[in-house]
Image (cartoon, rainbow, N blue to C red):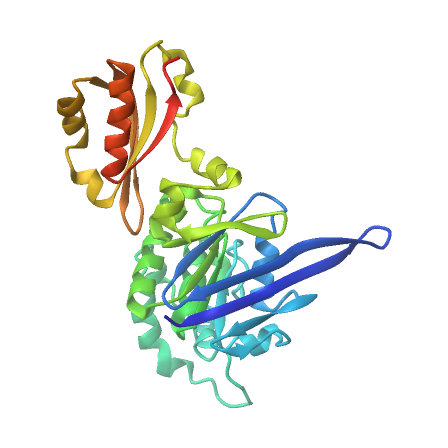
Length: 349
């Protein structure tokens, strides 16, 4: 598999106050492979934006290297990196020229990364192509080919930014919290557009977001950052099903309304409570009925959710086991042999 981006020991140190140094990116190594859709997650000050800006070239590294398609771009300017990557910003006003029309903005995007001289722009020659492009969006943008950007809604402008970023296929698309300023309905339409574009052009995408629902919808990989380091990374289904790092667990917990704390009042002596995660094929098997028949215990479903990820669905069930404690323990062992991830929330003591 081809690595589109290779970060090796990437470090950024800044002066903080009275000549004090602060490490905001700490020896980060990360490979981003062709066709990956990877999200960078982390709290405020985790280093997400620093990593993003280092890849884009707007923030030079103190040490370490960045390679894109095998070429060392560590010392390349953002303009020189434009032949490899494009970016959609959080603010819909960024990345577009507000007083120019939709068609004029698309014309600029069409020649991204190319050398330009003084010659007639020939806008009319591309209008039919641009009209067909904006008709893919379906949010009214198709009526505004000759409208200045400043008169568009935030959702229309963000959709245009995405079209501009991918009009000329980039090797790497950077999405910088691109749905954070949008309402839920507009966010959904933008995500649908992203999925269509990524599938059509087989794009490699890196995204920053705080919205876990967005991660579930479009990503196949996740990297979690804390204090300038990547503390965990992997496939989105592995991260959701079996997070290892405490910070990762905290992020995942925000997705599910039912928490271990909420189950505290349900504790009954002699009845174990477990959190069972059913992944892929195991989600389609009658596992609970098999366990009941095998060990003669009762199982009460306390709650549950389904995470519909872009790669696979994960079922989460909170179960109360009732019966002989030894049989309950054996029932848990049987579940684990059937590819169910089991966590004991309450041991029945």
